[in-house]
Picture 1 (spheres, each protein chain N blue to C red):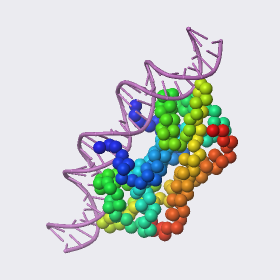
Picture 2: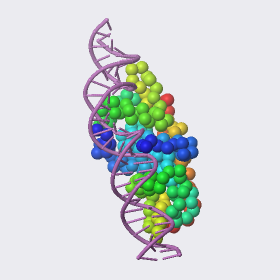
Picture 3: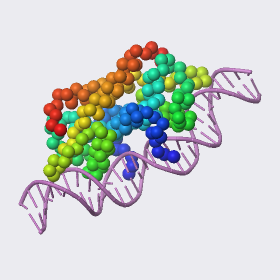
Picture 4: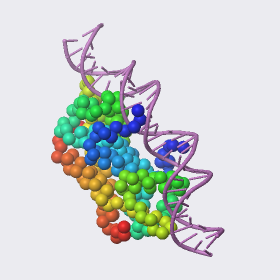
Length: 109
Length: 109
DNA sequence: ATTTAATATTGCAATATTACGATAAAGATT
DNA sequence: AATCTTTATCGTAATATTGCAATATTAAAT
């Protein structure tokens, strides 16, 4: 064993898990937050922002991209990474919905 | 190597990453959603809800608990698990805040 | 054309995760 | 007390992740 049994769960559950998993690492949270912070999407200096080697960051960026959380457009020499707002909206909506459901519940613990 | 370099990141980043990591698996999303769905916190039937073996579910519950997302109170023979609303609120606030910041940005991609 | 700069890929070692059978622990039931 | 029920833990195999050095790739600059 060792591999996640995705086939047992719904597409929605897998989709949310894919996104949360991608954000489930402090380096990727840091990258995510950096992309939110910078006002332009012309990037190329993410490596200097983090205390990790360039290949490691490249790998983390790839994972965020695969999860659909960020987009990367090649801009000449460098690559312009930015947040995919649709994905973030999905996460926001998910937790908004969860919170709403919890409010309606009668708390017993 | 192989271990996450948590020491390089802020406490807040690590805290968010810990929670998103815990939700970064479809089985744990399924458990999380089940605990939201059921109206009472008297549980004990999570194992029957999921297509995974009992030790596997027990392990997933432990991870959700370690991440602070759920609470587990021993209730006689069985254990009563329920959502920790404070943790969920933190996640909700985080993504609300992220969304807000994104709205204020000038989109260039 | 050569060099420089930015990013990606490969290969690999260390570590973590996922899953489950076997077994343990502890309260409930008979 | 013996048994049942529920949950946790241990041990272990399969797989995934993390991190980086070395190298490749691609476009800009000289």
